[in-house]
Amino acid sequence: MRLPRRAALRLLFGGALAAATGCPPPRRGPAAARRGPIGGPVGAQVGGRIWGDDPELGHLLRDGALRDRSPAREEQAGVLVVGAGVAGLACAWRLARDGVDDVLLVDVGQDPGGNARGGRNDVSAFPWGAHYLRVPTTEHRALERFLEDVGLLRGRDARGRPDWDTRAVCPAPHERLWQAGLWTEHLFPPPLSHGRDDLEAMAAFQARVDALARRRGADGRRAFALPVDASSRDPELLALDGLSMAAWLEREGLAGSAALRWWVDYACRDDYGCALEDTSAWAALHYFAARSSDDPTRDVTLTWPEGNARLVTLLRGAAPRARFLGRAPCVRLEPGAAPGAPSAAHVYDAGAGEVVRYVAREVVWAAPRFVLARALDAPPPGLEAFTYAPWLVANVTLARAPGGAGAPLAWDNVFYGKPSLGYVVANRGAPPDAPCVVTWYRPFADQPPAEARARLLALDHRAIVDLALGELLEVHPSLAEHVLAVDAWRWGHAMIRPTPGFTWGPARAAALEPIGALLQACSDLSGIPVFEEAFYRGVLAGEEVLRRAGRPFESLL
Image 1 (cartoon, rainbow, N blue to C red):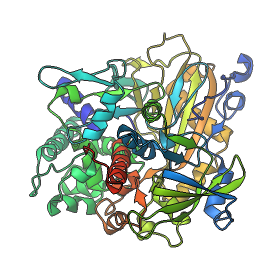
Image 2: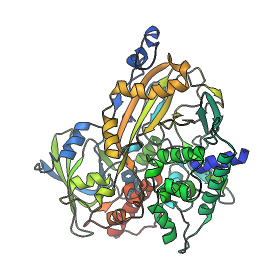
Image 3: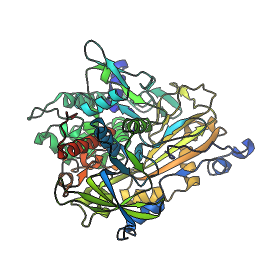
């Protein structure tokens, strides 16, 4: 969810969510009561809470309790977008660019943004999901146009190279790695457990990634590209999807390096919420190779204290006339029989306590595919192949910034060999003795998703405090008396898992087939869960709305 792995490769060898309205102020117990191990007085006195969408609404949708309720009334809508995450908001933005303003977005969440939401307290804004966006590659024209529209891309130099708003560019140092009390710059090699064989294995891995980044398939396309639709369909390349990343490392003779294996496993957990054995080799290699560019102006990471919630705000501002209705899950869909036919959606307005039947010129489904199964009369094909990674995000408010021996505090701070991904500093740049918020990420990748989800959702606030601070205070014991609050979000279905055989397999292919007049716009359809794909799917659906309406437009794709 953070710094791209390819950037780390170059660094190594170059030198050898609360609702968007916010959280309450952090609370701190008496200093005397805060001394002691986690699980004792410290854990008991830490403020904060668990945030998240209303679970009762989710249960009503899951159990089908509202599906057959008679609508209280019927309303007309031009374009109804079900799901106000990145894909739904991108759809609204694309339509707004061509003057289509009769758009209504409905979502089970109280606020738009999906898993790209953020929160805020008295100390800082912070993310509930991904913390950054890599600037787009040349294939992703739509995303580049959006960044230009909202001023993050300020212009181009005489050679056409992009000029990015430096206030959003992640400053150095980007990352550091902790092992046995010592911090070192970058994520490889581990400071205390590597040898010459590990460095040689990493060099060999980099050589393979570089070759794949340059490679073009028999169809002339880049082997790996963003969006995924721009990638080569060369059968030799797609065969990588049938392997796990663990099996690929074995095949390439690289599995013997424990340090390299940890690093690639960390990348799979960070990017997809999956362990090496559960990640498609195609998907894992795509993350390393797709963003490759020889242009240093495209080797840029954009980040904000609230993470990608900033992009949500910008998307909303770029489609100001699109309406949003929160706490409003779609409980039933009635797709038109064919493209162009009106469709209907039954939406439960929790605020009014009633079901409303919206009849729309177009309905765009921009929510996860597993939820779609609950709204249709018959479940869509291949649903069992769509699995989702559970995640825990904890925003820890501290009275002072973390320190450490060795490399200085970085944006991304990773713990070697730990189940978490470490933490990102939301308000880095504040004085060392000023309060700060660190965002700690923990994927639950060590169990099958259903078991991991049950384990995650069983955690209460005290258990989350013990889990997060158990790691943080092992690494930073001096912070024990400086923890102000722990605010957490449990994502039971954080993102689609690109398991072996899924991204280019029959289930995803079936999901791309039309369902009557219903349009779909969800990153699930791409097979990998990244901002770029959600944005692309939203734009793709928006342009299909324009096409069906017979409106002339210049495609951004």
